[in-house]
Image (cartoon, rainbow, N blue to C red; front, side):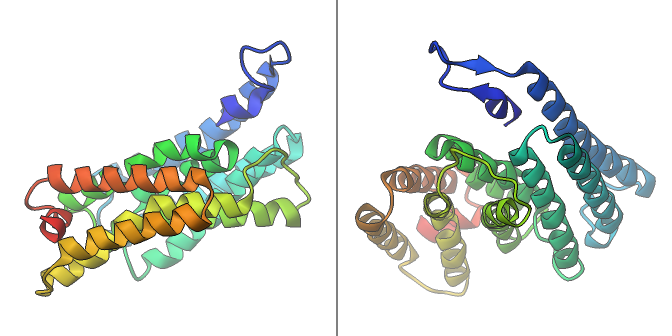
Length: 273
């Protein structure tokens, strides 16, 4: 993200330039306050409690989340003061607010921080690059499989984390740009971003719902899934930007592959076998 923000123009063209000063400053801010410090406190807290690095026990997650919020807020304040990048400033604020909301959710429910952590940056890449940025989001179904297979989360928790990270980051970013008067130019329009996000999350959400139905004795979930996929593709073809249609197809194919190669114990496999 910091590399993209430091670029001015199209690479390999005569008008292209790269702002090394902005890159170094934004990279240091994001690396220290949005990565190293939150990760360090998580590892320290896990060691202190003598638990796994994921801190699987929901009640043990509050301190790392609070410290993470504070770290993001410090990074936001520094970025705002230096004025190096409006987009990075807004993005770090999104991370702080999202982490606070995750903290509130965690009091009652163990939403997946891993899928939230993946899709937050993916949302930023979508705003910057559109469908090219969304390609990274194809890891979302893979991460759902991983968290579920490792028994770290339920299917709903893993899916919800990703949906939350994508939707909230994009909506908040555009809101904060307006409220804080921090304009960022040449971003993908909000509407297109939301269509692309819908394309990314459609198949995982449908598979999650069909998994519940299948586990409760509902038959024909495979036929229902493929029918819904066909209808979704037709709907996107008529109403959505072409970029969102492409992402819908890629994300659906990825989800199907994860379903079939995730193993017989993976609930998506049972839903569409």
